[in-house]
Image (cartoon, rainbow, N blue to C red; front, side):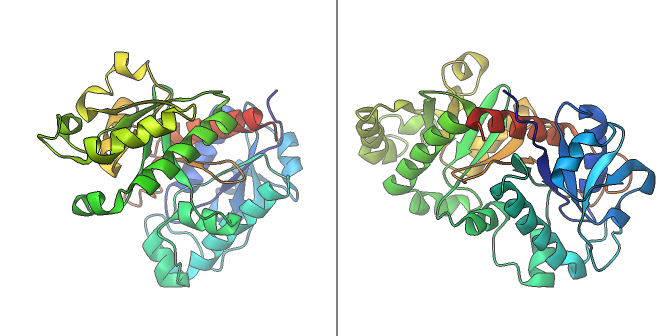
Length: 324
């Protein structure tokens, strides 16, 4: 059964494309996915939205209007010109949305892109990004980033670090924890009772028997074998260059990859506009479009809402899977 409580959508950086794609997503989805936008109404065209005082009111707003839960910002939004003076309000919107989801007023959280440097400059934002801030708000020590589209799900074990640092950061404990969180997330949020997990090798050809690197034989394969005895359905370590073609993808539910580009290149190649960023391991559902603030095209009417539409749909589907 689809949860008809609305999804909470944060405004993101007011100078980016967030408001524009929120309006476009509302036009596409109409009543298919009820959601409301949290932000300053003055940052939106006045004829395109309706003010609500409670998330439940979003269900009765006409399909042609974006439901808006007002949150005042100190300064106007100028497309393409991020303003550090709006940083604290941007952060406060995220925290407010989390509270609404935790209190049961919203079924899930969907976040529009933020600009980390602006938040740091304007409000001393101490987190690398959305994901870490949400984990902090939820009191969770470790979460996992999953990128998803209809054809592929990928999870990078290490994310925004230099390639030279990957072998140092990639440890048996980190890989094991990532696999456990990923499996639990797919069970709870995607309704997959026993997720099939493909694990990529770190090195070309998964080390080719030690000729191109030893991590696969030294500890990755033994770790996967041990987890297999616990009931995990694991394949790997697999050669990264042969695990993303169509026939290979049909044999697993998610690919766990060792570093950022190993995961993101295939999914962005397969579905650049429709990929969704999902945070696994939170006590609530969080999705996000898989792109940035796009200040260079903000306010020009050029931005695609495809990824946001997919993120809102996925948030609703995950809420139904959780039964929250």
